Image (tube, rainbow, N blue to C red):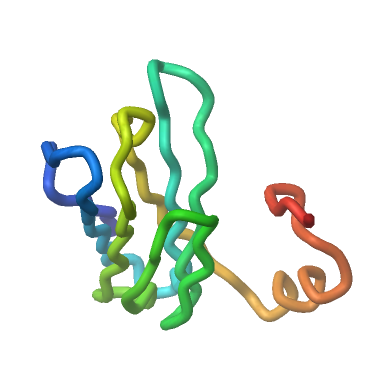
Length: 114
């Protein structure tokens, strides 16, 4: 069956340390894993994504792994602060060649360009 798994279920670390959470999926055609953070029941904040074997994290995060089916992606939160306390989510999706072409032409709606 097509499933997405995340572990550990909960994690407690001291301020200044780093923390890691892992996501895996079994959806054969999906090759992207997206990461989000939700603090205090507010909106989801996009943290970055893994496409195939390349990670594209936002500042302060690292993303690595292999987003293909059966692969895993690891999100690392660097230098924990009280603001790091949140619920972290992952999601799997399909990234097609047409997505890549449109991304080369203009940023997707969820991207921020500085």
